[in-house]
Image (cartoon, rainbow, N blue to C red; front, side, top):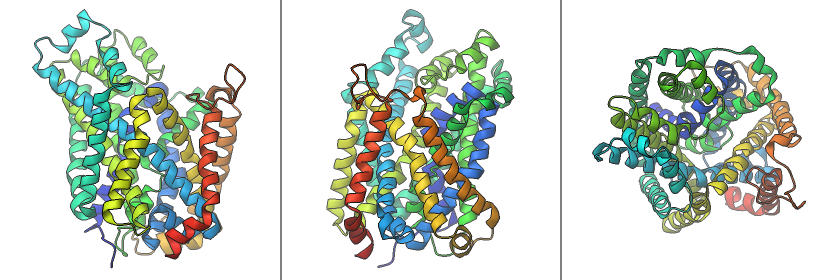
Length: 494
């Protein structure tokens, strides 16, 4: 039986955009751009070309050639003894997916929150004047021990699975044809409004101003690379999953560039929507800059409603913004669940059992993050940094297969747009060195938390603990090594 395919180029391009464009663009990017300004943006663009695009090209080509789930495709490409690497890539992405679904649920909670504000007797501004902690209390309430958030999270999973079981043409492709264009329209509306606010242009100038002294700070390099990988989906294995549905004559290079640039465009639009609003509503430019440079994690979920509360028609703009955030987060969640569906489907399990396994796993493993913000933050840290490892595994597999031969026999076939083979080979080997250096640099720094807790014990439960991160990675890697032969037999041989 032939594998279902996207109907045309735009089907897979929109799916790739749906995978890439999400909360990382509307939530994480504005925070980092506000913290570092144009210096961060310059490095972020550099890593798009050096790190993310070569990885995305490799993933697309592997999935297009082998047309299996991540474990099966990676094992066929890298060889039997490296099947465990494909297992780690899958588990890392699922680790992200389990908590990422919570971000989608939070986005929906704030969407309903914004809609309710329209119909309240008192405006949000009046409420904040009488109760300044109103927004922070709401955030604290929904992010810790809230049953409504858990129920919302479960509904999000069920809706996503319902869309995907209709297939890539009737499910994923149709959903993205509506979701992605709608997202860009909503972002453009917010950008126009923000830039027309008094002082908004100063926010735009700050966003693109380059402070050359920041380049001596290694943290900004880490942030720029991780943001590029996180938001484009490089190293996730998602592109490997999506390209398994591509046609044999699909233009790998062009599709990858369209998806990558579409993702970065959405990020820039998000920054242009938020940073000008911060400047417009601050008492002074110095106050706006001081606030942004703290890297406030609450910028989207608590500050944006406060900003819009001070703008005429702000209640409606808040609805638009959180609708855009929900659309972005949900469209990125779909291919994450599809990755799980495809890997389970490769085991030749019945459709009913496959759906049950997916739903139970997402609800079960995601529940702790929905219930505890500390657990959510731990998972975000562990598997976010884990993307450097997954990227390394893919790079190593390409390096073992002769990068130029691999590119010319898979990536270039059927592509009208051809990337330089010399550049591709340079990027592959350079990134391997960069990846190992960054992991070493991170593990040797105290900023990422201590290995031991205050009692001198292995800090397994520390939110940002090195011990917690390494332990969770080790569990997945050791499990993969133990099951390596079994995984190869189940995902490749049969």
